[in-house]
Amino acid sequence: MKKAAGLSGHQADGATPRRGEPAVSADLSTRDRVTQLLLERGATTAAQLGSALGLSPAAIRRHLDAMLADGDVVAREQVVRGSRGRGRPAKVFVLTDAARLRCGTHHYDNMATAALRWIARSGGPEAVEAFAAEQVSALEARCRAAMEDAGDDPLARAEALAGALTAEGYAANASTIASGGQLCQHHCPVAHVAAEFPQLCEAETTVISRLVGTHVQRLATIAHGDGVCTTHIPAQPRKSGNTVTTVRTIR
Image 1 (cartoon, rainbow, N blue to C red):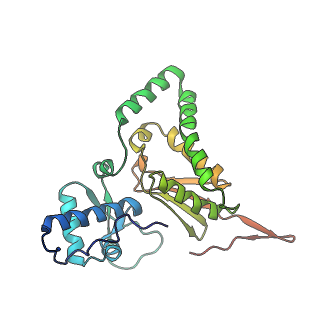
Image 2 (cartoon, one colour; image 1 turned 90 degrees about the vertical axis):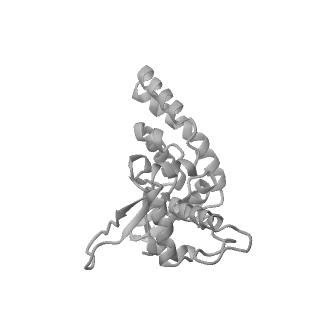
Image 3 (tube, one colour; image 1 turned 60 degrees about the horizontal axis):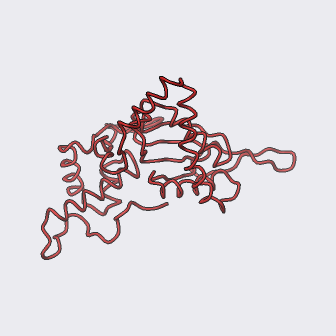
């Protein structure tokens, strides 16, 4: 998967800026890198950010404190599934809607929302669903072309799809988990519109299902307030003679 843009070629924070460069320039460069990583990964701890960017704990805290003060990030308690150890869960940091707006293409959101409201009033929910399906059809065609050599395995296709979606601006990645696979999209160009018209998310989920070649389940969406759009791809049973076995996955 692609690493956060701009991670190479930049000095690590906490070092003295190059001669002739103002300190604020280095700070802004590092802040952009923090923003990009949060965009790609979603909810992330300070320790994870510091490790990925080569920043000291004090340096990453300084940038996160500044971003909290400016309203670019919010801090939440990390969700821990299953049993957890003693002590309070770690804090995770998530980009705010305002910060996301500056990262992506959200132009004409108000006009798009108004247009969909008009379609809903004139043609009802079915018209909105038809519009949503038509809107993602071009995306589906481009992704399918990019996945031409991905083969038939749904998990391999999900990885190829993640690359295609990243090229489209979705900052996507795919991973193998115990129950199958997971496709995550860390940016949604239509999140604000989809918050009112979930048909856009539903049409996109249908396209993902067709592209990976199996049933999928959308677990979370940015449009509904989650940090990441997460789609689960169940492990596929594999037949061996007369015995049905389950595809082995890596946690």
